[in-house]
Length: 102
Image 1: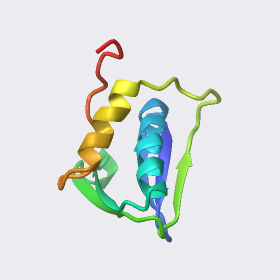
Image 2: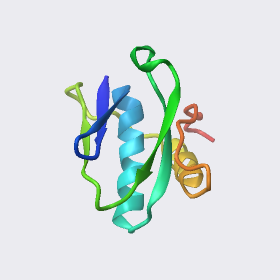
Image 3: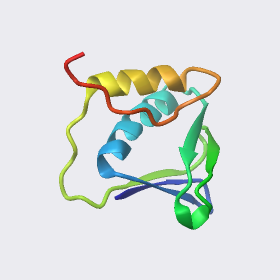
Image 4: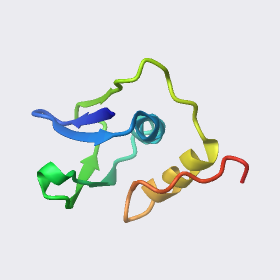
């Protein structure tokens, strides 16, 4: 289980390392281009099992903390689907991983 830590003081959001690796590619790509966007996320049971959103901006501190020792393999189709969502008014939100063959 990894963490996305955003802002100072940081908002910590837990993600599976595989999910976080894909989100990292999308977030870093968008921010490197100077593109701000909204990111939607689900809160855990300890936070009321609701949801929230973050305004992702290049000037706000960001960390990706992985707990596994190996870098997860990446699914290009999933990255492309997440990138498309991040470019809409809804923003980046976690989608189910598609079959990498399609």
